[in-house]
Amino acid sequence: MNNGQKRFPRAVVLFGPPGSGKGTQAKLLIERTGFPQISTGDMLRDHIQAGDEIGREVGTLMHAGSLVPDDLVNSLVKQRVARPDCRDGFILDGYPRTQQQAERLGALLEGRGIDQVVIHLVVDYNMIIARLTGRRQCPVCGTLYNALSRPPKQLDVCDLDGARLVIREDDSELVIRERLEEYERQTRPVLDYFRGAGRRLYEVDASQEAPPVLCERIFELIENGG
Image (tube, rainbow, N blue to C red; front, side, top):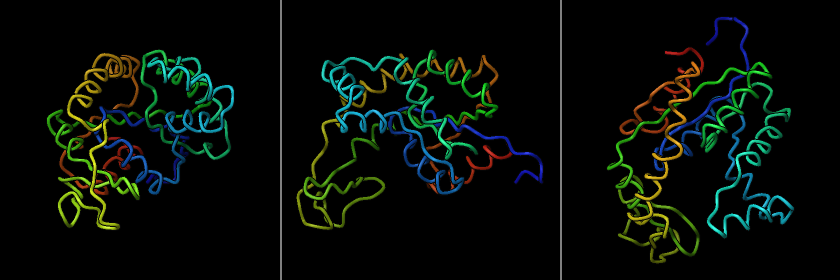
């Protein structure tokens, strides 16, 4: 993979709109690289569940519909990156979301001698809407299905317990369009920052290939560039 050359630690940033497959690719890349996944959403939920000071602050903000401050998110990422399991590299999912977060991340990684690789998953928005509105969940066991990619054997019925599948509120077309608009307004400009800062940024078509095949292509970009 690196022909015996010294391999620098790598921070892999998965970037793309909701429904682009970031979570799926993160899980596959964890297996492929052995890197841990750093999900700011998971970290915030863990604090909320623990009921600690950070969790109470985040819970109050979320209940009010407010965004979690960049400084708090940056601090959580900095603490997580310092753990021993991140020594060789890690995968960032859901971070950075703003230019300020991207700037702080860049400074953090440069200070630690970590190579940053940005993977931008590109999917047509109409396909994203079709993907997400096709999702169904079993209210009993929580199993997820998708009318396009993972349909149940019987329409709208769970394969495991026979319960009637439901559409989650977050998967309504109205909510999805609102999330995509928010992405364009707030998060997508971070791509412009990455380009201007000279980061290794690769645009990857995530609309056609099966997830394992796409993962291999991303892995090659991480290791060797393209």
